[in-house]
Image (cartoon, rainbow, N blue to C red; front, side, top):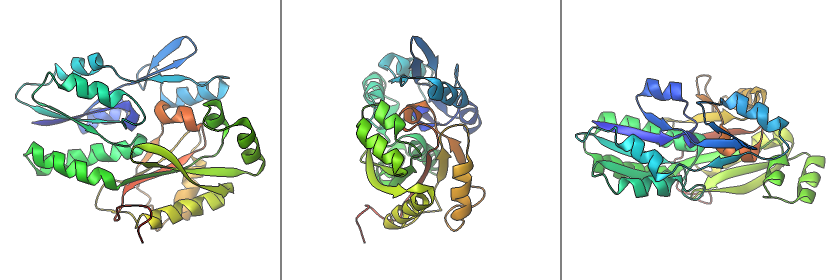
Length: 283
């Protein structure tokens, strides 16, 4: 049997993981001196409640090799496991999994080069492949190839949390807020990059559409999803209503968790999908 293991950076909840038959190892988030276990001792809703009330950004901690060996020891020696980690360019979690796997012959670690719903898609794709193929090398080769086509694009509602995290200056944040600037972010080669700016949510939605078109559209034969951050999904619902040709009514909707929520704050919307193209600049 081939098992799938991932971390809570994928924003796959423990309850969903149980239904899917996979293992999600939770990361930890700390507000001041209090540490919480992601989606175990703090829900995503509780996280955002605390985030908007806190003057300082919480801190998330990577998983350790010990966290992984605790899980690996529970895998039957006759089974194999594929471990899909959040981007190694965003966290040391992938490196911890890789180090821990060196003591096991039946554990295979993949750097998703993504996070939140982008990472989630690779996990779901892995599940599909385990039902189709018995050869783990074949599954791993497909995942390594197809992960390069996962696109995650997001529209932020506020610059406040990028400012708090020191990613932009206070002046840039102030000007952006005054001009109602909405940054458009993407994950490229495992890194979060700014790919555009929009004035207002409507223009932001149009910008997301432009980016999807530049990525040559969505491969609907593979998993895809949308996500939002915060306690209100009205901006996401508006985006879905305005993008009926891209998003069907049954598209999976995910609440972004602490790993990315810490940096983007509430009010963000995102979409992740497998693209038909290889890069953003291809014509």
